[in-house]
Image (cartoon, rainbow, N blue to C red; front, side, top):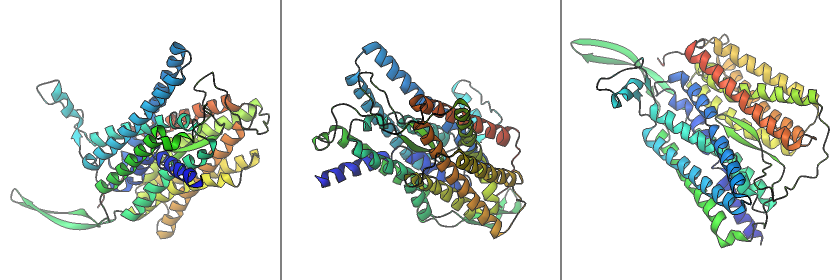
Length: 462
């Protein structure tokens, strides 16, 4: 019997990593992409905004479930079919988008060329070159991953609660695995060499980057993610349809009141795992002492969550490159990966240390604020940071690790505190709403400051 539990747990781990592995993989690969794509240092800003707009996916799915319940009454069969169909669709779309990324990530075009479809003459909107294929596929990947947050957990509720841990381990691997693969791939360092350009009777010389060899290419990286998503698709099919896994299912879905975590770009977001997909089912609520949470304390937690999500999900990811790349390609690459790695590792800390103290939350918020302020100040001096040298570069990497890890743990504390309070489900719902509001505001602010007002300056590669 134990081997069966182990096998089903392994299937849930493989299924769970499909939740955010493609977006997380794209994020840790940014250190290579920004040097080769026309958006340059503004590429993280575009990706951050696209990820936030993709939250329309779970909204549309939630509306679909609501309309189905209202029109069909007892919707157990219909809900199961919709849930299964949507999971298949989003994992397939994620896999295909990753496959297309592997071949077309470097394809660019001028925005104005699109007008040729409608007019006989070419009309250039500023003549700006963009990575149109990559940005379009990023939206699809983000749409898929955001929607997975409201579809995977209801499916998990059809199985014994013992498999919850296996699923969350797999979800955590969606951040760990791409980071490990990116470390193996290399940092993409380059040296500037003098190149002679002869043509039209002229002889010009200029510096151009010569990239060091990677262990494997960007194309191979995305192909690896594609294979892992196909593995997740197979794992889901086995869990859903095989007779082997049927004995591990429950007669009626059980919806544990638990707070889980998923990554968006370079950060984890808390989300409410208490799913009420059918009014005829009685949710199983954890037998935890519910603590009274006054309005001022609850609003303080909402404000803190909004603030840290505006920083971690919206604003700081967009200017991360301005704070790290001036120190060198190696520090930008390592900083991206270690910040992404510290996030899930600090979430695991919640299994051992959990505090309900507002003093602890206040101290952690101060650490987040101080580290964010340091990052913003250094980024504002880009491309010449106020402190230079190897010590300053290492310090910046450590500050990013401190910021990402503290934010992840702080979210865990706040979500757990609200979950165990008398506000329960409704409190977590409002927490999720303000998480998205903060993330969107931070992304829009970053877009305005980096691309419209251009308050952060990039530097040429050579």
